[in-house]
Length: 211
Image 1: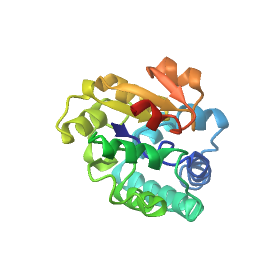
Image 2: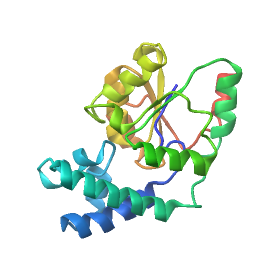
Image 3: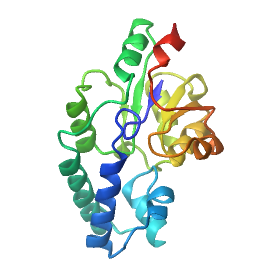
């Protein structure tokens, strides 16, 4: 199993959207619409998202400045408020009990991953990880999920991926994974159109499915 983090382990999209709106205005001079947030700020690393918004890939200095400002703002908004998606702990317990390996495949950086894992208490559970800085091409490119499968010693076609964003679904499906998406961020219709085999609200039914 390959798990995205934001929107999959925790329904934190509202904090990211607010941080994007505030920092895009402050740093880029952009007023982001709801449509921008729905369709352009959707999966992938920050420089790639900036390119979608502006039409230009940011230089290294701008990318670093924006990243630090936006992710810092996200953490200040989300601190103390993150909760796991319903049913997740029971699902992970069921995977452990059956010896089914799982990995984290996220566009987040090491600081945000450490923050999220600490807030959720999942630090020891996701030993195998692919972070944004581990790949040269972020989602929707298949590279993140291909690397996640590789780090588990598996072919991507033998993995089930959980994603919440359209570009994340495209990345996982493009790698050859079967995708079960969560509707924490995008509507079911968009997730299925992007390549998900199934969409669910949360993980409450998944331990029973494994049984």
